Length: 330
Image (cartoon, rainbow, N blue to C red; front, top):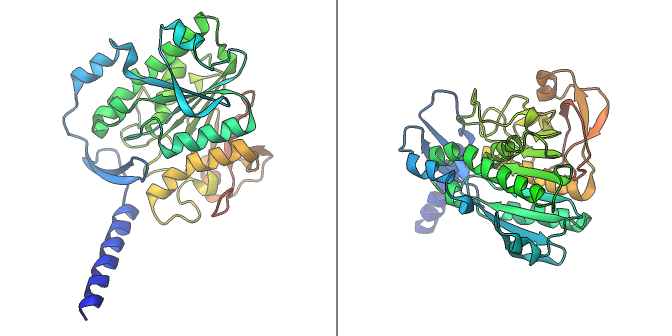
């Protein structure tokens, strides 16, 4: 009997965790909500009225090295080389190749440079092409409380934009060879980075950009932030941003509950997984929809276009729906 009671407590605790996650969500005006952070998607209770470190945010504009830029290439796929803004030698002494495309990757809240998402997307790009992959480690800001991190996203993004502008000014990069990829808060970050370049970066891919506190926010991701802006929505109305905000907005499985997921955290985290898979296989072809409502209901019959992939010259416009499988490669 003693063993049975112990087992029951463990199961009950697990069930409570799932129930809590199933109820994760945010509506404009809510003071409290849960939001996942870190590699394991641990849920954190967010208080929208928690103190914001305003001085820290102001300091972001004064300190160029708040972001770390970690370079990975086929010559160093696992061990990062650090690039530093306004430091020509850090570029010259690295494996960075100015003749290759450059992909920037931005993690989400409570993330860091070598987390699972960054490793997964880096590996996918390097497997299919000989490119420069630069992981933006903005953990100094991302590991603050959610409201501080969210308020810091625009300036962090502008810092990334200044880094890109500097590379172009140095003659070692072209806007037409830059692809920005960002997950959750990182989705809005890369939007601000592209905006800082005057919308000249060739492609931006936002992976379920964060929803809470971003509605009617002038600093959120928008279609003019790059020459082509693609958005993959996997947890709309809850953890992710609902409305179309790119040139092309994809709503796999209707955009909310992903196959094989019992929690919103899982669905939110599917966007990077789907994207990494399409970079390798370019196999998820979506149908064009007449409206967001059609995409959410899966009632689309238009022409088919690929979701995701790493084609820097890709361009589409519209709203799209695609069904995925439960398991990799989806």
